[in-house]
Length: 428
Image 1 (tube, one colour):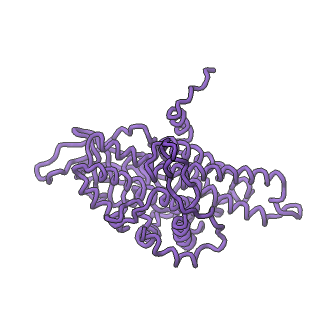
Image 2 (image 1 turned 45 degrees about the vertical axis):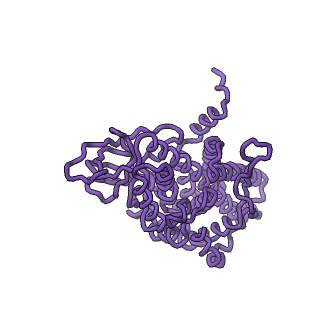
């Protein structure tokens, strides 16, 4: 993984001096074979040296370019995404191509490294399309490429563009879509016109609440028809209307996509198209869980620093026993959520059969922890935590939106119960 590694040594010298070191590195990132023949053993959940270096590089950039004041100011502008920051992360550090093979210009990394970047994006509540482009859209295209579909050459070209950081993509499904549940396409395939090139189709329909589609250059659109499939659409094609909506979390603004007889190229058809979307949603849920861990951890750090220096009755607020207990419970929740998130990323990295269970567990646990962090951050900051100028509301809004995105905690718990074959709750 040469791309991210090349910049890490330079970045370490400029990283946030106040940022605490992360858990110790380990040299065994992946699940190892079980000598008893029972599949895979428990993977190492600590961070490797390479992952720690990648974290340092990303954190350095975000500390310089995505401080809370800058993020808050951007939410009040028409362009809520910081595309200059994204180009730095995508092209210079290589975050856009982490999951893309080296043969296509990417880093050839795994979901473990992708989760590390997601944590850092969550820590700074950075307004960049990392989840939508580098995870959701990329995983869908990789699924098409691995299946060797007829449109795999188009997928290969798009992945090459994404790896270079010059192109941003988004998958046209509602942000609230639940992994493991078939997403019914709301876009239909229309009759091709005589002048259309071979392999080109016309799409019409509306998709509501799409994440990271506002700055996207390419849209990956599931569409129904004969045959139904997955299509690549240039965002500037005539007939596409992107209507940004006022989202609760303006650091990840949603938009509605309207397509009217838009020219599109099919990259997958039939069951393979559904598999590509399903793979993207599952990976996206796991990486969103990692983002929630980073958010909860950073919110705890900010709050801990505040209660150490805020005095009441001639003593620090943090010295009161009730505050200590709340902070301790918060720290335990973050630690448990991190373990669940790391396990999900490790399972996805080696295509472990436990990945659906691990993803459902991680998203449920991390959603609850992120919400706890957002609420406690505001409460323990007292009056200042309720002000617009303080970043606490940015963390609470991102926590709330991500708890709804890609499946709520309750829906993931229901999925977990089904996958683990747990009995239903007793009737009242």
